[in-house]
Length: 553
Image (cartoon, rainbow, N blue to C red; front, side, top):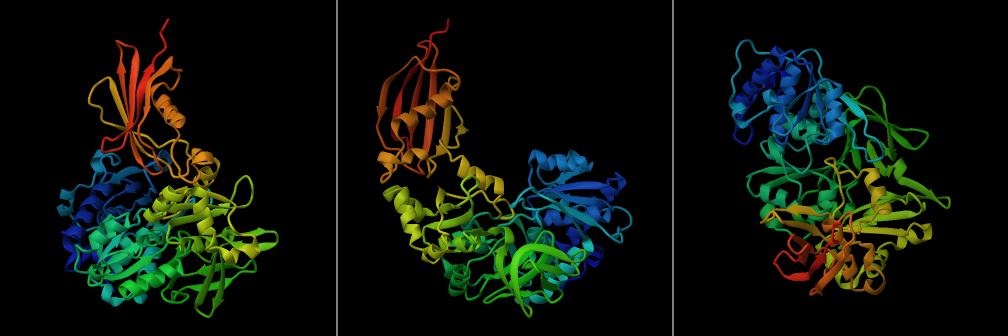
């Protein structure tokens, strides 16, 4: 195990903490920032970093200066207001976020401090937000001692042959899972900190091929999308291990990884409130040695460890068999229908086992009360959707759900997309799921393209898979009706007015689900008309025409 944080920043070891950054320079740069913060008498620091190694340095500098740290979950107005409420300076590596004096640039990685070396005070605190997957986000405080103790416990149970490997991550270091593993466990276990985040399977695979030894810190959502058609032979020599957290990892996904890579992933169970509780490989989760656990009368799990403030109750239904932990999912994800207990997580696992599904989230419909499934289709699933339509897709998926029929747990409501909006913690916000069911998309999410001339505007968007217009005549071969295409044009060209008439209207090519469509508008003021066209990215025309504008009085 590597040295504690005190030694790490006062007597740095040899080697690199991250690519191109030695421990000695890392410690010196941290002392430079710590002295700057102390000189400015800063008491509260909001941190936002893309580079996890710089985040580690900035957090340590904040603590060495005796200030409190606030890890922002994102750059939303709500997060910025949270920082303002605590009078935080904004410290980061993003010019759009950081205060000018607290922008951590690459040249600062080799900065040198003046004067005496600072040491950590008796205690430090970092504040984080929970995922808001089941409601409003909560603020959770963690001490430096909590984080160091958890990292030391992980160093005792994680493989020794990971030492020296680069920890490549798909998860953000701005949340507890990422902070615990990308920063604290990396420093405690002697891993090199992977600087950037790799959000997609293709990115992680490409990054792995650039390192002689690496491990992945990721989530079930990404591993579900990994699929079997990968260059596993190229990964085996370099990828030493996989850590997954943020949800229940389907058993089949774990087995596939073992088949392709020769090892099972380390499936971590814990929460922002509790920190790490247990780790699973080929069998059940096993409690970390320092964790004490019991099952409450409600059937939910309660835990205590050196990195929690007393006993913490969880919302997870579980069984204990000695040190082995069998998880049944969150209590709020086990619902009761007709006096039968139904696990939404189990329905998700069955759906994820289908080769068409990349991601799945099930919930009780907010209006009708029955089970609803919100699914992301992979490329194979999208191709099947385009060929056979919505009803055929639902019928195909139901074939995997036979065990649910006696329970009446087959989903009654379905929504489909090409991806689900998971946050940096790989969680889906309850509000997003409800919105998907109650307000399905009726148009692409248009974004503006650069226009060549002042009288032109251009937009691009992906046709949603689950447009309500794909029913009726278009149920078996979904395509966008011409009248709907005109509605989209009018909404962008004349959001507040009705046209005088449509001229020279032509429909030349079908627009299908998941097509990328470009919409062009050109205003001819002399003729008082707007020319429009919808095209594929290769320039192929799908529709075109002219809008005769109302004559202004």
